Image 1 (cartoon, rainbow, N blue to C red):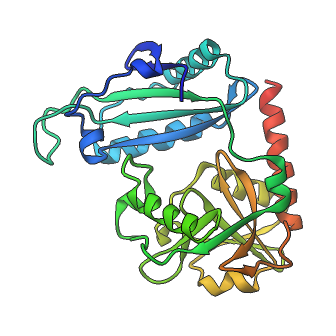
Image 2: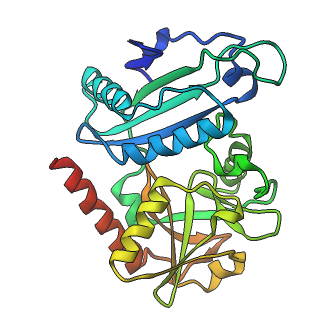
Length: 289
């Protein structure tokens, strides 16, 4: 990553950012982050991302200015200074430096960083081919932990799972929760289609309520596609007609194979294609504002 970033009120080169060795985000993962997609110089769904960040910061009692307009100006300035047309912004929030120990005593100097990223890792060919995935063996989601629903700076469960997926030659890893039900991917939410019904794990399964997940549910409702949020046994994947994954960078990615077994006919399905088309239309509307 390179370019000019926002760092606690200043705009400086990314490589010049200095984080204290006593910063709690560095020491304990005591912080949050959001990834915001940029299309033709505009941030997509910024208000939804910030609302989630502000809600999580209140839960963790991390001080942060909750002025939406302030962040809108920060995003615009970072985009303008970097001439960022297509890419994304990574907003990181740390509790900052405080007294030694787990309790966040006197940690009122929280740190906010907004860093530009100039590449998107998914090509059009990838959407035409679809993703392969494996069900992760070495870690499980704990739906009783509030952290399962937050984008915290401690992403070690996801990292371990992603490493396993990589070792097993898959593009994504699907995590189960402690009850053996599907939770979601290492970086994605999961949707399964059967008989034109869209199934996705309920929030009680220990998932992050992804911003793209929320948008897909809205788009499906507009197209009169029935939606059911519920606990899903992993076997549901193997009798599904199609499936797909979502996040802010991949948008809507067809899932065509899990554990070496084809999902449906092993090709991107019609509902995934329809919803991606509708998703793209909402991006076009953003560009025209």
